[in-house]
Each structure stands twice: as C-alpha cells, then as structure tokens.
Length: 304
Ligand SMILES: NC(=O)c1ccc[n+]([C@@H]2O[C@H](COP(=O)([O-])OP(=O)(O)OC[C@H]3O[C@@H](n4cnc5c(N)ncnc54)[C@H](O)[C@@H]3O)[C@@H](O)[C@H]2O)c1
Image 1 (cartoon, rainbow, N blue to C red):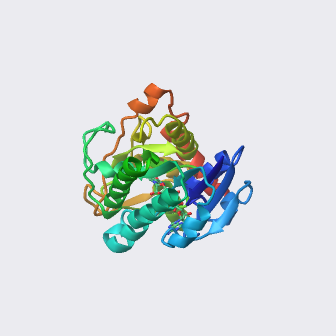
Image 2 (image 1 turned 90 degrees about the vertical axis):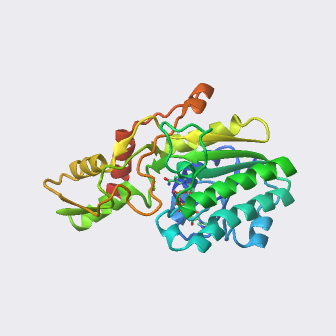
C-alpha cells in the first residue's frame, strides 16, 4: 500500500509514519513549518518538502497513492483569532486542495484529523452525534473541512474517515500544555503563568493510542464516510497538570499567576470530555491513562 501523510514530520504525523512505514510505502508531504526531519529520519519513508497550498506540488505527490492521511494544519486555536483568513487558507482551503489531489489521482481512502473543538461548548461526554457549534476560527475551518470530506465522498466516491481528537500528548510534543508549562518552569522555577483560572478541565490522550485509534477507525469506516471521537474517558484540570509537572521537576512552592476568567483565551473550550463509546463498541480503548500520558511526555521533554 502506498500511503501519503500530509504533516507527517509533525508531532502526531511522525508517530503515524513510524507505525505505517512498517509494511507500507510511506510518503511524507510537509512544509516543515513545524515539522522536524529528525522526527522521521529513522523511519523508511520518502520525504517531499511541499505546501498543501501549492496545488501542483500536492497533486504531483499524490500520484500512485492508495491512501491519504491529512494532518497538515495550523493547530494554533488561540492565534486563529488574529489570523482568520490565513487559518482558513491552511486549515480549510488546504484540506480541499488535498481532497482535490485525491480526486484527480483516484485515491479512494482519505483520513482527516479533525478536533473535539468542533463541538464548542457541549454536553459531556460528547458523542459524535452532538451538534457542531465552533467557537474558534480553527474549529470552524476543521468543521468546514469535514463537510468537504462528506461532499467529496458523496460526489466522487472517496471513503472519508473523520477523527475528532481530544488533546494529544506524548513523545515528540512540540506544543500544548505540558510542553508550555515544562519549558516555562525550566526558565523560571519559582512562578508559572497560567491562562484562565486553572479550573479548565479537559481530556488528554497519548499519541501512541491516538495513532492506533486512527488506523483502527479507518479500518472500521463503513459507507461513504464516518466520524469517530478519539479520546479518553478521563479529564484533568489545568491546575492538576501544573501540580504533576512541578512534582516531576522536583519544584516546591511555585507561585501560580492566573490570567483569570473561565477560558484560557478567546475560542477556548474550557471543559471537554468526548464520549468514546462508538470506538469502544468496535473494540478500541486507550492503553495509557492521563497521568501516564503526562508522565511519558515529561520524560521525553526532560531527555530532549
Ligand atoms: N495535537 C493535538 O492535541 C491535536 C488535537 C486535535 C487535532 N489535531 C490535529 O492533528 C493534526 C496534527 O497535529 P500536530 O499536533 O501533530 O501538529 P504539528 O504542527 O506537529 O503537525 C502539523 C504538521 O503539518 C505541517 N504543515 C503545517 N502547515 C502546512 C502546509 N501548509 N503544508 C504542508 N505541511 C504543513 C507542519 O510542518 C507540521 O509538521 C493537525 O491537523 C491538528 O489540527 C491535533
């Protein structure tokens, strides 16, 4: 099987490359804005440095491909407030470019990394059938991409797997709460700036579980397209994460400086827990609990 992974040099993408390169011909398509060559250099894959906004480049890369995992995106929810058009271009128009490259090259399997944030403020645990109510530009672009997958599936017979990820952590993390807190505390072990009031409570999933779930969901996609929540059944508060990190670093009496407010930033969804009943009924469940996933992330950050 020849598999193209956009964003394959990034945090989650590199784990997908690690897994799929065993037994498949993998092509990584990445502009390296965030991705790192060192993340994938040990794995058997062809690397194409290119941008999903370059239609010719992504079209050429898609030749002879059987399956496409589309991960390339600008993940920055907070920043999408200030750069809605740029975010739209990468996270929505970019997705359509990748879909179009699939259509033109007869690629019949498309896997898309969407996000729990498409639900906005929702009842919890949130099932896949909950209404889509984005409260950030990033979430709106993800939701719009999902809609294009549905129309491409209906019109051109492309099978679409839509994955709504919780917050993902683990080795090779280059962003997110553990990465931010750990690096802030390394610089200043006495104080920690925390966005919001610290009571935000969200769900986190280990990247290895994420990759397993993504491939599993693709294999269980029935019909034209299907949507899967990919998360865990636990939540943890921002304050508790800070506590685990300061404990790991052996720090005492760290002063937490809260910016205040229920949300960390405009567009933040302060409470999130996905229902993973659909995936569980099919036979998948996470192997790592939240504390273990955080510990593994911190171990990596310490060693790198
Ligand atoms: N990390 C999370 O918690 C999380 C949660 C929900 C959804 N997601 C989604 O999962 C996917 C992967 O996220 P990640 O955390 O690994 O982020 P990441 O930034 O590490 O990976 C994204 C990759 O895409 C590449 N890229 C960005 N813009 C590009 C462009 N225009 N053309 C080609 N390549 C481009 C980057 O260089 C990077 O390697 C994204 O679609 C993200 O929205 C991530």
